[in-house]
Length: 390
Ligand code: B12
Ligand code: SF4
Ligand code: SF4
Image 1 (cartoon, rainbow, N blue to C red):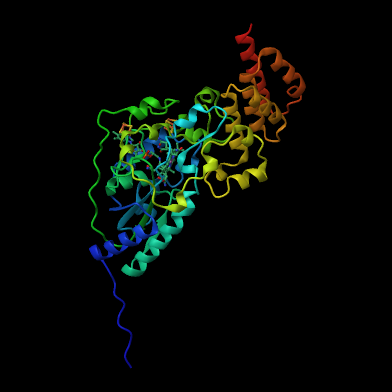
Image 2: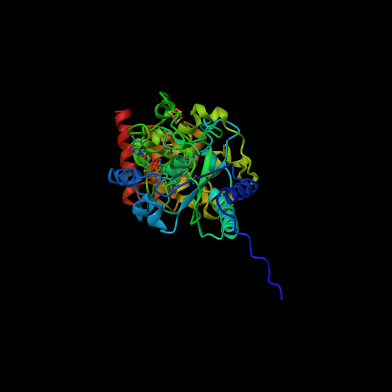
């Protein structure tokens, strides 16, 4: 009896071509390959960043830092790292919405389906394909694993880390989302991309909170993206005015990068932007309870930040709006069950009402406040008014 012909196992350039074709078919815009030991500098740079406290409250950045800095510590079987990118070039400049003070500004990457969901499925599919065709082992990562995607992408030649620390490609600008596949397959590594920032410093100069202690370094504690997405509890007062109407993330340093003029349009339909997230009215967002919040932001990265933190951000935007109509929304939020929401409402009211009104509102809705932090916000708001109108 004749057996089946032995399964053909692909390797090297032939395997790479097959994987590249499948990646394109799946909607990836770029694929490059590097070796796991391609960025030895990470072993010093990540600990230095952490030691400076630049990760703020993101304690998970410290967990497994050794694995983050070294792919082979995360998975000893890795011989090649495949880095993939999907483009999400926005249709309009993300800076336009910043002048519409009654609207919320949402970072471009979050105005669409959660890329974790979109990319994870596709990376798994690609990893499965590679594993089957090459008879090799694979591990797939997007964002949440201890993998440093930007330096690996730079080493693989997908682009370079600009002075704003984000990866820029010559064909897609900085509007790229990254993912990685670690594999036991031995591929030839691609050539790293060189730095093309030159003397430009537009991204450093536009940052509203001065979050870059030096070019190529970011202090996340000062970054509006961190403050509005990751930070738990009240946002430090010193940053609230500078946040403006940004309610989720910030695109300022990305939007001004001159390399974006070469950005090709996004190809992956599942990453198409949702119109209702381009400039949502703050008045609408301030009324979202937990259930309505989950419906409104279903499937987007915003959902993970949670209703209370988003309402906190919305109230800060209201405080920066100068709008009497929105001031009433802030007054309504003084009875919100969440102290972080009430505290932000007090700050907004302190910015939007004069001294007499502020005292009246305090007498009506502030004297019974049980939460220490919210009481502190009242004291601060009343003291500020006393200073402004002695
Ligand atoms: C933590 C994190 C954040 C933090 C910290 C950001 C940061 N710059 O590290 C916060 C919450 C602020 C954030 C914000 C954003 N993020 Co984010 N984030 C991450 C995450 C999970 C880890 C990044 C990390 O490892 N940071 C640690 C630091 C140490 O790494 P680093 O920036 O590479 O640091 C380098 C420099 O400091 C440099 N360096 C240090 N010393 C020296 C000295 C010299 C001389 C030189 C040249 C360099 C140098 O070397 C370090 C190592 O390469 C990644 C996903 C991932 N798993 O990689 C996404 C990721 C970086 N984020 C992403 C995005 C889209 C954003 C935002 C644009 C979202 C938004 N619009 O609000 C902003 C961008 C803000 C900015 N300017 O960085 C994308 C970026 C894609 C890309 N094209 O690069 C990623 C890759 C997610 C993804 N899967 O696509 N993010
Ligand atoms: S995302 Fe915004 S706040 Fe953060 S570094 Fe860039 S410009 Fe500054
Ligand atoms: S804005 Fe200029 S300095 Fe900043 S990343 Fe882009 S090219 Fe580099």
